[in-house]
Length: 229
Image (tube, rainbow, N blue to C red; front, top):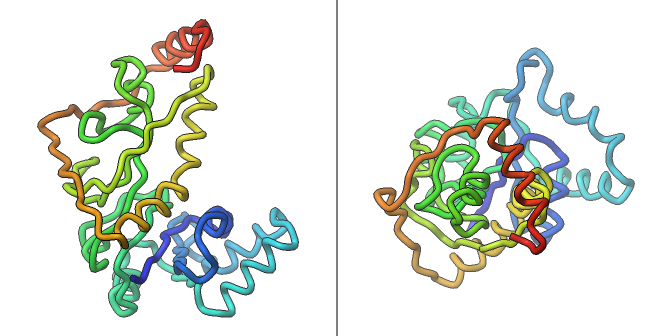
């Protein structure tokens, strides 16, 4: 199975390498920023001072072996989509701050996995972590294959329930940082021939951004709680 992680920058690659074996997956970094006149690879080189020596060695080793690839266009461009199709990738791993078009999603043989910090199909949309706490819905991370809609992809690989701390932002960031671990678990399940769970969106709702006032009140409630949520 050929796997491609869609990354915003080289820092993402170090996170993936912490869970995946070296050479197990490929990486693609595109020029999704407004600096269209600067080649993608130059945009990334300026990040190297943020790395430890060992991490720089890892990056260069992967690059020299052909596991890190750069496209000087945005991820939804014909060039990026064509490159993915040409290399016949089975699964993509979402780690970009952009919305994928249908042509990109369909360029993978199986699809693109997303790590969603809410329980599907119950919790779709924005601020689902906060709304989960409000609605007393289990908190955790869902890994599923996306489609062109908002959390409507029909194939769920797994839901990993997670307890949270007493601080809203810290808890939310911890869930976001679980994405690579969740992807690794999902890939192992898929390789073992697991059956996907249907994402029946009629059983849930699409939520929208929670106001800062409501978030503040929720955070106060979490801190007043004597035990973990």
